[in-house]
Each structure stands twice: as structure tokens, then as C-alpha cells.
Image (cartoon, rainbow, N blue to C red; front, side, top):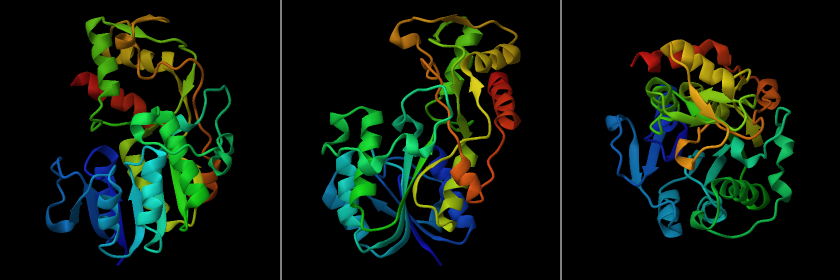
Length: 291
């Protein structure tokens, strides 16, 4: 039975991942701050950690040796450096949740080589010292330059689902419904998404693969921001009120200045089958609009 540690696994796709790992028969331990109730009952072991405290992470790591560690809560060079020390000699593979945000905007589908963490300069610091983008770049750089164990970094785009606690898509639907202004700098920008269950399915599959290094993961296809708003308009029977320049409070979470979408050729070549974006996004928009 594989011994798997999930750092941060009680919200959104992390919760779905734990369920899939349990279904596969894994021995799962979930390490969190212990503040959010989870639905796993007696099926998992639990550790309480402070991800920003190196001693806390090391204590969790040393409870046993691990076949797989999933790290959903690594946001800085320091977080990654702490993990490299804590899990040295104690883990078979380390699977880091990373992000599309490591890439700059651009018209072509982004490939893993478009951001090379192996050569990116490491600047020690905590998550308070850096932006989200820079923190994730630093985390990848530390792991791929310093880790003594195999690492894969999954670069997800925005993850959507009924269970999205950030309610990004929910908010856009509410804004169209009530006629609130939405800031969209470039309606023609292409963006990628992934469904929360699909993200969990990919992470579960990754543990069984031999992939290492950065790997992109998103649904097949992309959509313009304008087309996404049109899906919402169709579902609600109302027109969106948009502007290219707005106050920050009105800016769409999907409002990017240029395209921001990914190629998943590496994962597909390794055998993973992604969902088609058109098979789930219109239905999700309709379902959330009905609620």
C-alpha cells in the first residue's frame, strides 16, 4: 500500500484528490493547519502543520517515509527550501502543484520550456516577499535545482468547478445577472481552464506515471474571454456590461491583457487524456446560472 502525504488537502481539488487516492487503496495522510473540517472521517491520518515553519514541516516529514508527497501549499523559495531539507531521503517522488502563472502572457500555446526553472535565479524569500507568480517561479527553481529526490511540477491554469471556494466564475455570473461592470482588457485573449475533478484526476494519475519536471495540465481547447462572457449571457438571457479599463474591484479574474493558454503535449504523450473544454464549460456556466 502506497504511503502518500498530501500537504493541503481539505479544499477544492485537493479534497477531490484525497478521495481519488483513497479509492485507489492508498494509505493517505493529510497535513494542514487543522482549521478546515474535512469529509474523510477515519479514512485518513491527519497532521497539523504550519507550512511556513520549517520545524513544523520537518516534524511532519519525519513521521515516516513516503512514497509520494503532494504539495498544494508551496508559495515561495523558502517553502521549497524547507521541503528539500525536510524530505531529503524520505520521499520517493514529490509532486508540486504549480501554475500557469509562471509563464508570461503571449499569443502561442505555452510549453513547459517557456519557463525554465532549472536556470532561473533563486532569490531566497518568503511568500510575503514576492508576488504569486514570482513565488511559484522561485518554488520550482529551488526544487529543480536543489532537490535530492524526483520532482514533478504541475502547471494548472485557473481551476473551475461548482466547489470553487474562490467563486471566480460564480462572481462573473452574478455580475452579468445584476448588470455590474466587468473589466475585460482584451476580450479576444485566449485562456485555458481545467475542471476541479479533472485536476484531481490528473494529480492522481501523475503518481502512477514516471513523469518528472514541469508538466502542463488543462482541458483540451481554449476560449476567448469574450466567448466565456457570451456563454454567461446566453445562460442568463442578459448582456454583460464590460469595459477595457475599470477600477481593480471590477476587474474580471479572467481579464488578461494577452492570451494565456497552454499546450499539454507532454502529458498527452505520457498517456493522460484530458477533457474537452467544450464538453463541460457551457454546462458548468448553465448550472451556476440556474442557481
